Length: 105
Image 1 (tube, rainbow, N blue to C red):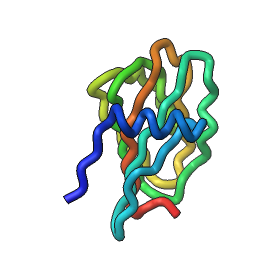
Image 2 (cartoon, rainbow, N blue to C red):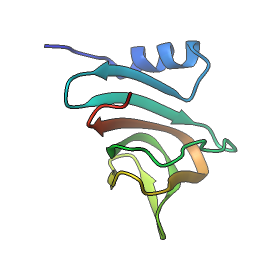
Image 3 (cartoon, rainbow, N blue to C red):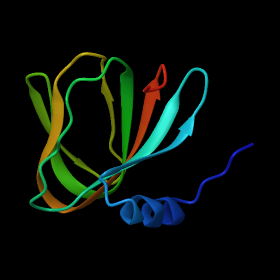
Image 4 (cartoon, one colour):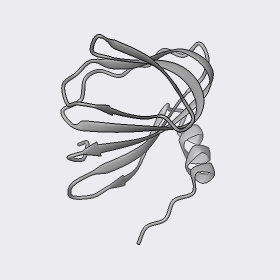
């Protein structure tokens, strides 16, 4: 079993001075913590993997392909591989648990 504490992961992510921290990579999946502040630009480009987002905290808009929705704590969103997507109009510090399958390189 592997157990992770979100507050500890967030400290590690912030210490690395990046928006994303991958904390798990297994044969069939990987997981990370993604964080953006109000005014930040989401640098993502389409991925080769399917992706699940679970918003842990914050509020923003998420555009996937041609669809846009508001996301906040408790939102879970699926992004198919190869589809352009990004968070924008971030109004509260955004923290998102990200799961990729298959794992990101």
